[in-house]
Length: 100
Image 1 (spheres, rainbow, N blue to C red):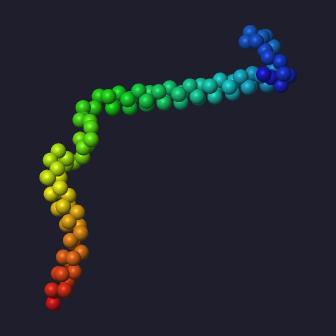
Image 2: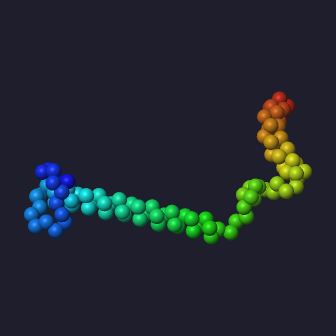
């Protein structure tokens, strides 16, 4: 819509400069939106194909650096891991007390 309030057809011989400027600005914005949309679609296609082509096992516990299949082994590993962190300050204090 132009300043005059009239709609001009595409094949109109006389266009006002205000209408043509708006049209050019509209085309630039449309081109920019189309480019961003195409880029977004390309990224989405790449990420979905990358996820689809991965050959990693899925399921609970499969993405951990240790096995959770044997519960007794897991219990032992957790006792050693958390127990060493809990015992460290007591061992340091004992060492400082015994040191002369």
